[in-house]
Length: 280
Ligand code: GLN
Image (tube, rainbow, N blue to C red):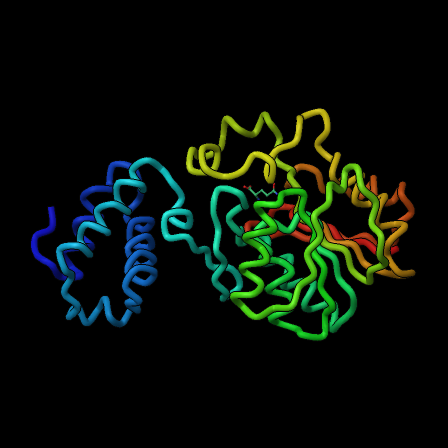
């Protein structure tokens, strides 16, 4: 239980309740995220330690801790994920934005100063919304198959004041109707056989639809998107993919065979093959 109603007491409560499941560092990050999201407390507020919590606020903290014990992602519990300095609403219908996807966004921002851009499989909308917020010169379009994901993405777009055109479409069946200067995608790429190494917080709470492909069809989304892109990109237009770390060479080979040029492979901050870019 809580020793008293101070910040320090809340921090030691969380430490004690969660230490069997999470590392000290993870618990520290959770504490900061909880106190920020629920009570708007900054890291300075935590050091000052003057805030006192009411009985109902302590109950709220206890409820969050119970959900963390069940391995629910903190972003689902608090309803928000941080990505490239922006806040995105997330739930079970969309993938929680990952740091490697921030690297994809940074690369596109570095290489392009404007143009008509399409994100395929947008999920929470973190890619198109961040690009538009960072550079208003982009004319931004985004597709997802899931109506529920598009609901979250459009709410994130209006919340952040980013003008994005959303389209519901199954790109495995439908064709693209417009032409674009840049096409981006972080499609499902995790193999069914990778499941055994994955955390429960991902397997039990994040959407399979956004994550998995059968082992024998690892590149199914990449092949389909590349074949759509070769028709729908403007001449010399660019394609960007986030990829599975084990499929860099296969992705390059496939893009070559489709007729793309200037193909580049990039590593993420952990040194793993993670992004491929190519030009029509
Ligand atoms: N990078 C994500 C993960 O490992 C997967 C993203 C995806 O499948 N597109 O959980």
